Length: 263
Image (cartoon, rainbow, N blue to C red; front, side, top):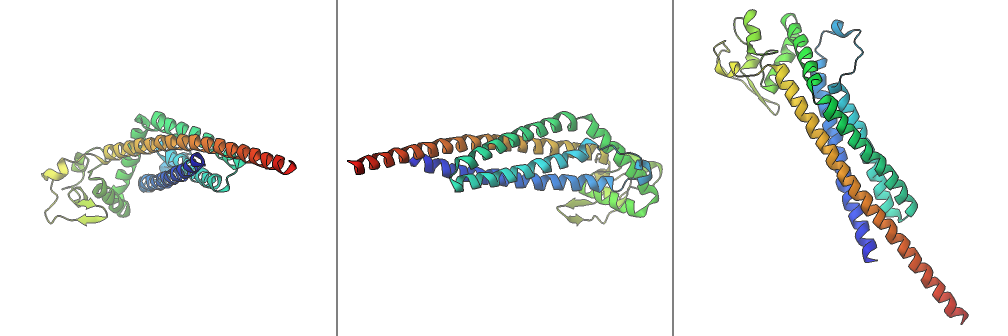
């Protein structure tokens, strides 16, 4: 009984951690998608009218979201297995968990091999340059690109020097700062001699670097979640063995009582 109760409690605890990790990865995937969409929504639609290619920075959030939803679903199955005390439920949970663990490892591997490389850099460079050229003739795009510059603390597409060919000074977004949704505006002019603006990187470099960091963090989160999943499988198997042992002991007890009645 002690082994059974310990396995049951451990399964509840591990499944709780597992579900929380799944929710966290799902939320992070949605956030990553929104951040990428902030860039792609500003592109010149005519340039991408016949471009049906799904690039890795666009695909990764969806892959991670699907796997995260799978994790949440499997965790619900784990809670049901611990509550129902059924070996059939446990077998179903272990099978589903095995599939989920494989999917997490595959998703993390795909992200690290194919998304965390030069293709991501090229995607953001092309996107940012397209948005940057759009901002020259479209005030709404220029305003949105300015918000990106403030949020990422970047200036220009490749570097602050991009503005020197067609402006008399940097846009204020190269001199303003943006912290957690709050805008801190400087009263000084954002001239080409401004040290803060000149020290900033281009938005294509910053965006690509942040995207790589996000991909690494999400992949690491999936791998850690897979490890927790393997632990829950081990505990579930131990719980199944405890249930079988308990069933056998109950059967022997019933058989013994039946013999006593006959005597």
